Length: 147
Figure (cartoon, rainbow, N blue to C red):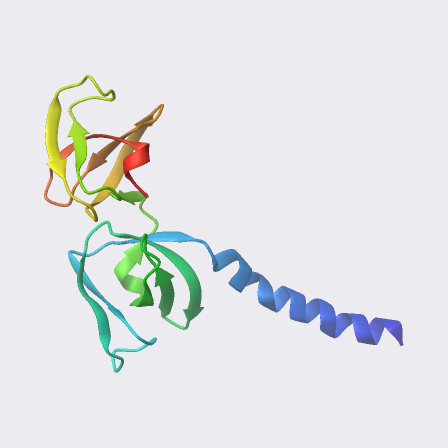
């Protein structure tokens, strides 16, 4: 009698594992421009239009071919799974971020970006991250400036 009760409980637990594994997974936009919607289908309204390549997102849930995601500002929405991948990316979280030509605060400045600029991670060295923007610009940024 006890085995009959345990088997459905064990099966239910195994069915929940994919959802637990998915929650918190980090993905990034893999196409030049993507839309994020209010629901998991193209019939739903667009809440973010033209999200650019390398924009990082955290997966909260999944419905068939769609991920429910949040961004660095805790905004949420649905994105089609084929528009993202697991490329490691970061996004700037400060109003003015210096991107340098090498890993260090005394290295020459390569360029400056504002809040909300996504980058692909190329390498890491201590507290510094070598990054590349979708337009090809690259350099090093301190980890405290990104999410």
